[in-house]
Length: 479
Ligand code: GLU
Image 1 (cartoon, protein in one colour):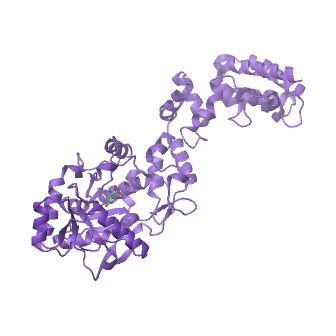
Image 2 (cartoon, rainbow, N blue to C red; image 1 turned 60 degrees about the vertical axis):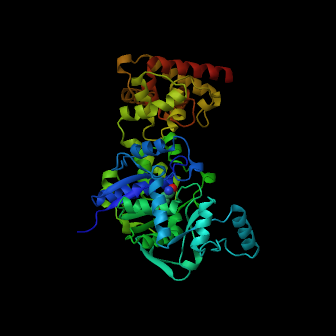
């Protein structure tokens, strides 16, 4: 029977979830789901100095917000498994695959400096590797501080078939006698990761390319324990548009920051999906369900993937347009509240609808629609269309105001206004731009905005006339 597919997402809780981490989680989730396997969460918190309060909860909540629910209800937490790692490390010592190292930090520092001056790569020189058992016993008996190091073979190579990169080889010569258990009794990442992947029955390790150099160390550990290794797949690097490694300096990297700015989870996930994977078709829009149906590990690219926020904006706009006005309004509500804008829900829904086709992020809604909630400030010049004079603008606004005055409130909708006012303009022989530009500017206070009827429809008769009146006063002072 083929082995059951089990993948894992194993972040270190050192801060908020990185977009690269979200991609790793997504691909692991998709691969497991597609193969009717399991997707497990593990918290790699063995470096206690880098622990950040609340990070674990944040990771779990973020995964859930994206619909990437792990199959284990409670994650495997490495700091709760210290005894297990120690036992395995001691087992390796018994088997002659690892050794106690009593070298002091000062000695290691001297060694490093010496290697630096000789331009050699920093490497442990193996001094404790061949201690006699007597020497070891003596040091243990006097409780000398110690670590456990792995006996890396000095010659040969480790070669493996990566599902993304194909055959990859590392010379053992380039590898250090890695520490597997630190002096504080905590395992290093390498040891804990291998033991957990084995005990959790992980069939596929799918992770970022930055972990590729760790893989030979992991494979040597598997061999030392006599365990069959998992299949590895290393995902391509995420790059800035200038092809440097994606970094905070050039933009946001925390998933949270994107959510805060009003990117929808489904848009962000769709965007992340396409960073390093493509379906081989023209399709660009994928729901999570569709992703599960089509995702194949063989379609992951080797080449670095550029994090192009323009594409993200485009996708987000697409998903924003799919929402019902009521849904979109609820999503925008926190942004209005944060900006101190309070309004009746029905009114808010009408306001949001005017921008649904245009906004790229939820956060943009506030600035795009602010003029609906208060009389906008602007200069009289804004009311004057092209070569017309201030007086003409004023006269046109007056004609419009008189006409609008005649429209009953119960007929006051964008459609009706459009029909009625367009007919009025035509009959009057005036130029459309010279009538509608001043009206639109009077209502929005902006050089660009939704059309005058749409705005007037939302503002209502009273406020529309009030704003036109205000515009005429401005022009009066100006003329
Ligand atoms: N804890 C590592 C990280 O933070 C996981 C590396 C791995 O997947 O083996 O990305």
